[in-house]
Image (cartoon, rainbow, N blue to C red; front, top):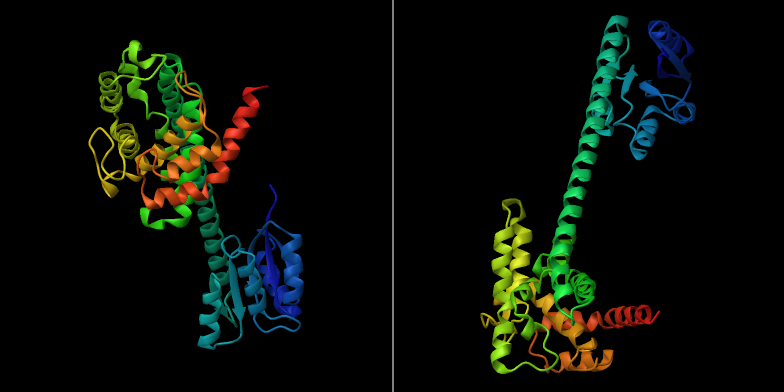
Length: 360
C-alpha cells in the first residue's frame, strides 16, 4: 500500500529535516524551500494529504501559498498546518481567515505535531468520504427523480394521445402547444419576474399543458368529429370538455403531485377563460385567471388559427398574430400579449419548421 504524501515547506533546511524525520515512517515526505517551490510541488503531486507550511520565507511567503490554495479551491481538499516562529495574534487570525486547519508555534514538541497532523488528516479524509457519499446520494436521488419525471411524462403523453386518436383535428396540436407554451414562459420569466416563475415551475407548466384538452375524451363523437361548424347547443356541450377534464384529473390525483396537479387543473379548466370575463366555464376576469392557463390559452388560440381544420383553412402566421393582438379571438392580459409579441418570430419559426416537415 502506497504511503500518503505530506509536503513540508520551510526555507531552513534543518527545520525540514526535523519534520521529515518525524513523518518518514508513516508518510512519503516532499520538501520545498519556499512558497514558489511549494506551489510547484502541489501542482506536481496531486495526492498530498497535508501541508506543513512556514510563514516567513524568501521568494514567496506562506500567506501567498495560502492565497494560491484559496484561489484554486484546494483548502477544502488539502489541510494546511502553519508551523511558525511568529507569535503575533494577527498572523494567526490571518492564517485561519485563509482557511488554515491549524497553527503551531516554534519551538514545538514532535509528538504534538504528529498527533495534530494525524487527527487533521483523518478529519479531512472523513469529510472527503462524507462528501463523496453525499454526492453519490444526490446522483441517486437525481436519477430517481429523472425516472419519475420520465414515467410521469409517459403517462401524460399517453393520456393526451387518447385525445389525438379521437379527434381528427388534434393531430400534433398537443406537441405544438408544449412548444409555444415553453417559449411564452421563457419571456414571462425574463420580463415579468412578478409572477415568481422558476425554470422548474415552467417545466411543470409545459408538461401540464399537454393535458389541456383531456376532457374531449368525454365529448360525443358526433360533436367532436363533426365536419363543420357546431350549433350553439353543440358548442355548449363542447365547452364542457374543460370541466370533464378536471373530473378526469381528479381521479388521477396523487398527494405528491400537488403543485403539478394544480397546474393541470388550472390549465384544463381555465384555458378558455378571457381577460374581460367573456370566456368559460367560470367567466373569470383579469388576474383571477391563473397565469399558467393564460399562457396556454394564447398558445391554443394561435395554434388553432394557423392549423387547417375540416371547417376552415389555416390562417397565415401574420394574420393569426394580428387577429390575437387586435382582440378578434378574445381579450388577453397586457402581460401575456407583450410576451406573445416578443415570441412572434419564435412562433413563426416553429410553424414553418412543422409545415416543412409535414410536406417531406
